[in-house]
Every structure is written in structure tokens, then in C-alpha cells.
Image (cartoon, rainbow, N blue to C red; front, side, top):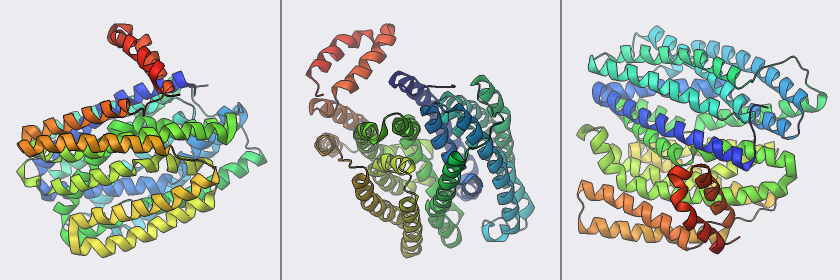
Amino acid sequence: MAGSFTRVAALKSAAIMTLSTYVTIALGLVVSAVLARSLGPHDYGRYAYLLWLVGLLIAFGNHGIPITATRLLSESIGAQNSQATHAVHRWLQRAQWLSAGLVALLFIAAFPLFKPAGWEGQAVLVSTICLLCFIPKSVFQFDISVAKGHGAFWVEAVGNMLISVTYTIGVVVLALTHASLEANLWWFAGVSLTHLLIIAPLLRRARIRTEKASLTPEWQGKVRHHLVWTSMQVFLYAMSNRTFETYLLSRLMGPAEVGFLAIATNLTRGGIELLSSSLSTLLMPSLAHAKGAGGFGQVRRLLTDATRYFLFLGLFLAGVGALWAAPGIHLMYGAQYQAVVPVLQAMLLVSGLLLLDNPLSSLLLIIDDQRVRTVRSVAYFVMSALMALAFVPSFGLMGAVMANAITGFASFLVFGVYVSRQIDFTPPWRDMRRIAVAAILAGVFAGGLLWLNGHLLTQWLSGLLYALVLTVASGKLGVWKRHDVALMINIAERKPALLGRFLPGLRQWQTQAEV
């Protein structure tokens, strides 16, 4: 097989994904800042709207196919059923191409409904760029999902890094030459086409390929059942993932507000991916593998750890992000984008707390209770639309954050309770309280520093102080367990030149840590 799901292999995959994430996020921030400064708020908002539209097309074109591929391929590999692995891959690949083609035709027919404000008379240009970006990126997304199902997480990591470097170089060159908005969009389309050139050799190196195999009636039922329900849920999620907010801002407020929302969203997503993308990428296939190998007992043990990790990372993001928002916007985007600061702070707080939804979403994908997932998606869709209509026209940008927050927390609380009962899972409440106490202590220390001096430099230092206090306090309060420390020791032993000095302290900590 292309990869492995052991704890050591998962650790290696997490390291590779972390490196890729750091590079991709850093370059993404550079691209965002360069584009925003070179284009200005109005044109950057138009650019951001087209990128959002491409993302929407990808969600519609791929719908539940990539998720189904990762889920069922990892399960079949966990069950050591190579015939099912090849058959599922081949069947879903054909479905992906057919789906992308149909969505492209529907987009052309329905383009007047999506045509962005400020692009009058340029329908051919906009639709052409969208399609040139949509098809290759859809194929790339499917292929990396297949690779993740095989445990070859490095395929996504390497592919994303290569594409990010290429894209960044072009954006910087265009900015230096004072290129137009249209030139930047054509470059984005060109980079999108390179997705096809990059993914093919990576799959060959991972020895992932389709082979002739037929789905057995059992697996055919699994694929169709999972795909139908997942597709419906992905469609509903795509329509409710700030879609209404973005559309309403474009129609009611103007392109600049769309750009402001895009900056806040991208920075928030960057923070989330920086802290948790490796864990998020590993979680769903690891849970599916655990189910295939040991049933829900093994799933519950893994879920307990995931809950601790995501809560810690979420509170880390919320605190550090809120403290760094103002100096970060000032440094990267300049004074003309200061309206983003309060929106970004609110979004980071909400998104940090909602990181706990990641284990819930992954769990919903493996328990095969498709009706619950669909009910959740429908409820989220309806509530998202209602909240956007209620808040965006009156409160603008902050209304978009309010709508998203209310919808997200309501969905998480209701369905989190239900799913936990379904698999008899009890969240690690004691450790969650300890993490909350550590975050409160960190907030007190950081707030005290800001009270003494509110200078921009002090805001950077307060974020660092928050991170330090949260990390140390969580360790002192017993959040990290013996097997967590064992993994740290494993890493240090594999890198003695770099981390060997920490081994004595880690071994002592392991003897004192809770089981």
C-alpha cells in the first residue's frame, strides 16, 4: 500500500503536512497582501469574488466524491481488501469527471445569476477564467483525497507547496510591473492548469493507480449510499459556508466589503490550517481505519485525544489571533484595510472555539448515519440563509460574522450531543476544564501587559505571552497524558541532534504524567 496508519506513520505524515502547511500559509499570506496592496480594496474585492465563485464550483463539481474516496479507500485498506480499493477508486474517478463536466455546463447556462458586480460586458472573460480554474483544481482535489485514503498524505503536501511557490512568484512579478486585475486573473487560471501537471507524477511516485476491478454488490451499496448522502450534505454546506454572506455583501455593500471579508476569512483559515490542518487531515481516515480495525471502542479512544487537541488549538488560535489582528493587518495590508481588524478578531474567536467541530464532523463521516448528517446540513443551510438575511443588510461585515457564529454554535451543540450519545462517547470534561483554566490564565497575563502599554509592539508581545502561558499552564494542569509525552520522546529520539537535549526532561515528565 502507498502509506500506513500506524502511530509512527501518522506522526511522520503530520510532520510532512505541517511543513507543507507552513510553506503554503506563509506564501498565501504574501500573495494576499501583495494583491490587496497592488489592486486596492475595490479591485481586490472583485478578484476575491471570482476566487470565491471558483471555490463554489469546485464544491458543486466534486460534491461528496473526494470525501467518499478518502473514507472508503481507507476503510477498505484497513480491512485489507485490495480488490475493493481498486474498484472504489476506478468507479469514483469516472463519477468525478462526469460530475465536473455537468457542473461546467450548468454554470454556463446559469451564469447571469452569479455574474459579479463591476464586470458588466465581460461575461465571456469571467466565465472562461472560472472554468479554466475549476476543472483542474477539481481533479487535483479528488486525486489528493485518493492519496489520503491510501495514507500517502505527502502527495497533498508536496503538490500544494509546488503550486503555492509558482503562484506566489507570478503574483509578485505582476505586482512589480503594476499589472491589471485581468492579468492577475489570467495568471491564476494558468496556475490552476498546472494542478494537472503536478499531481500525475506524484501519484505515480506513490504507486497509486486505478486497476480494472468491479465493485461487489456490498461495496457498490456502500459507495452509492455514502456518495448520495455526502453529496447532498456537501452541496448544502457549500451553500451555507459564508455563501449567502458573500453574495449579499457583493450585492448590497460593494466589492470592497467582499474583499474585507475575504481577507478576514483567509487569515482565519490560515491560522486554523497552521495549527490544525495536519491533525484534521489525519483525523477522518484515522478514525475510519480505527473503525475498520477495532470498531467503535478504538474510535472512542482516538476521539478523546482529538477533543483535547482541538480544544487546546482552538483556544490558542482565539487568543493569539485576537491579540495579533490589529498589528498584523497594519503590517501586511496598510491603513486602507483597518476595517478588517474587528471583523478578523471576532472571526478568530468564533472559529477557534468551533475547532471542536472537527472531531464531530469526522465522526459523522464514519458512523454511516447519513440521515443525521443530512438533517444537520439542511438545518445549517436554512439557518445560515436566515441569519445572513437578518444580519448582513443591517450590520454589514460584522453581520456576516454574527450570522456565521450563531449558525455554527447552534449546529455544534445540538448534533454534538446527539452523536456522542450514539457511540456512547463521553467528552474528556476534566481535561477540557483544565484547558479552559489555562486559557483564562493566559488571557489575564496578556491583558495585563496590554493594560500597561497598548503599543503595536506590545500587542505582538502579548500574543507571545498568551501562547507561552497557555502552553505551560496546560502542562502543569495535567492536560497532556503519558502517551502524548511518549510521542514527544519518540520524535526527540529520532532527531537527537536537534531535540536530544530535551529527552531527560521529557522522560521525567512521562513518569509524572497521567495515564
